[in-house]
Amino acid sequence: ELKTRQNEKSGELAEKIAFNELKKFYDNLIWHSKYSNKPSGRNNPPKGIVCDMWCYDLESEEYIYFEIKSSINEFEMSINEYKSMEENQDNYEVVLVNINTGEISRHKYSELENLKEVNGYRFKFKQEKI
Image (tube, rainbow, N blue to C red; front, side):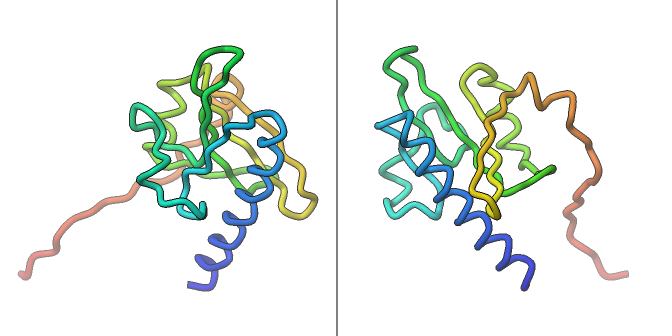
């Protein structure tokens, strides 16, 4: 439980840092995650994309999606986050935030795909009495 609370705090801080940095490039950036102070029903990304932030880029005339991760050298993605990135390779970025330094780095699918490791499986079942 302590680790979960620490991860929550790190995630929230990472998103604040990323939002402030990305806002310098995208005036209309929308913070969509649970840490945003706007109700998520009012700022959902188009097409059901799973991400933390998004915007409509006026230059490219396309949506851009951002998934924020608090990490220095590794991170985990949910299946839905990964599918969203895979299906929107040109418009989806993972933003890594070093919460110790406040530095961010931005990464696309083409860069991350060769770095992925599948290292676990989760099984859900209902146990029956014998």
